[in-house]
Length: 112
Image (cartoon, rainbow, N blue to C red; front, side):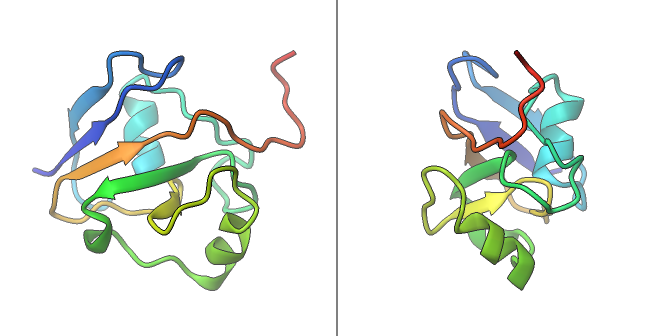
């Protein structure tokens, strides 16, 4: 089974995380199932950029981004060549190293 290594994030997973996942799961769902509460304001419908992540290792093994995701990523904070929306990036059979950016762009935050 592949693993996702989440690099430390100040608030979401200060110690980082190393989780085993089934192929076919999105990075977002894998995080949420393991108590890494990555933001997903559009409920994983590929309509925002709050679940933006950077795939530091294993990028070539995940599903390719479609045009809608690419257009949305242009609006993400801290965009890099290996950026993906975690709700759209599906894990294959290789390990991943994932960084959750420090900030996200959320036009309508319900956390006051």
